[in-house]
Length: 308
Image (cartoon, rainbow, N blue to C red; front, side, top):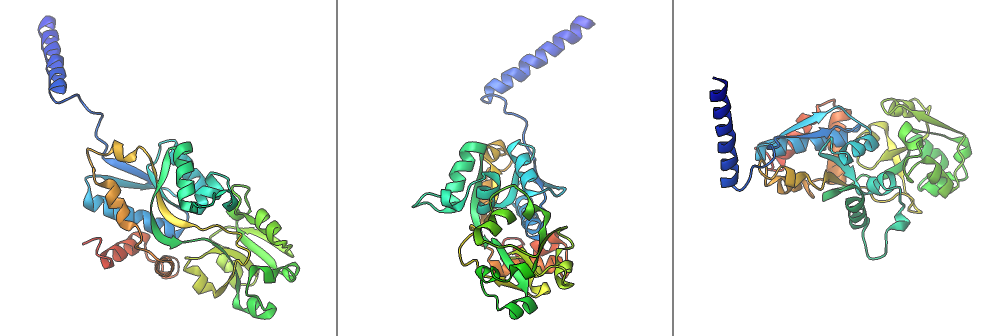
């Protein structure tokens, strides 16, 4: 009896081997799910849900959006192969992930082209098509502060900074990357009365209650409108561009070619469909109107004819 089952098993193994050879070799297990670690900001969440909706509507893949992570931790997950893509920005790749400065970008190359070449060679990840937004850092102050001190540019802060409190989320005070508080304040020669690292969820409350008079924000943040913030011109050009784009592992499209041979073209349907003004409206809908990022993303894709 044991001999019979052994013989049957061997025959089955030989049969499977023959099938593999007959079909040009057995492939690795077909990948059916891609993982995204969600972002800490509404803009990133909206884009990640737009990716999920597009991918699941146009391929046989499932997208698993997991708990939010900081950009640095999300990047580390991506590089280690524990996630598959993330929303990012060429300026973040330059300053935070590669720890370089705009001055490192060679003449004749855009920041986007430069960081894509370097990050692909060094970390085996790359940016897809630009989404159409430039969500760069921006220094801002409430209208009352702007009017009181006659502020129009960041340089206008230099003679009055000693009278003002600067507050921002903890990450802006970190040492990760060159576009942070210490190099920024040193570059402009700014010495504030006080500096306050604040939880991102409390930052705008601190501004509205007058506990913070100058802050850093993002060009596409809908909360700027709610808080009545005035963006000061970065007249000396300290902050690099932050063109939004999906950052993916180089191997992703090869890994899913059996399940989703069209994945790259599907993801690139998001290329150029946003503007700063559009994204400001979308983030306002999430942060102020308290709509779910998934619902906002779906309505936007339907409006653009990318989802039916």
